Length: 247
Image (cartoon, rainbow, N blue to C red):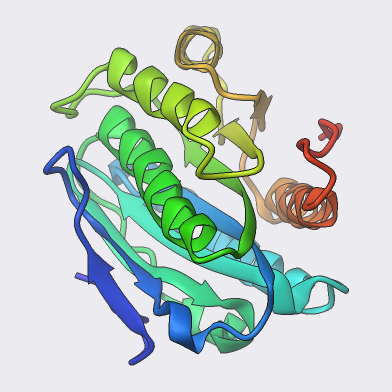
């Protein structure tokens, strides 16, 4: 269940019948256009050694976005997953996201339902994007899926993730979508190859990899994520996605 939602967020269902999502009510939105930001974070047992550093990275991302000239045009959703999904909060206005709220929000344990989490992230983004578009808001999106390992617990497969990404692009619910798969603490070439294949087969825009997770590398990741969010938001209204950034 969501733990950092506000009264302006309503629960939404998804046509697939999978785990739904929460999002800010349209009558609570004051701008004419928005970039939807989704951060999906693996919290399986293997993440435990760098859990605090991951929390720090999330706090850095939120803090950096608050200084963006497009801060009033960002809606952020945070999803955690091990063998199940948990929405920490749905698509929430950035100004309602306090970096301090993300302390001790990650609790590591369980296995890895990577495909289920990725499918939900894309489906929710498209679903809310369609609502905004139908209400004449301008909307694009960027999502990040962070994982340190291979899927071993999903009910869905790679094809479901690919189908949702295709739908996001072809449905006209979003002006554009940037999707980034991030391999965190990937020190095994087998895992790195697996995630690179997942990126290609599912159709993610980009794959980036961190070989060893520590405060320094995760701070660098936070800076990359915040720059990517800013670039995609600034691209809204151009008819296309932002350019791929170098990690």
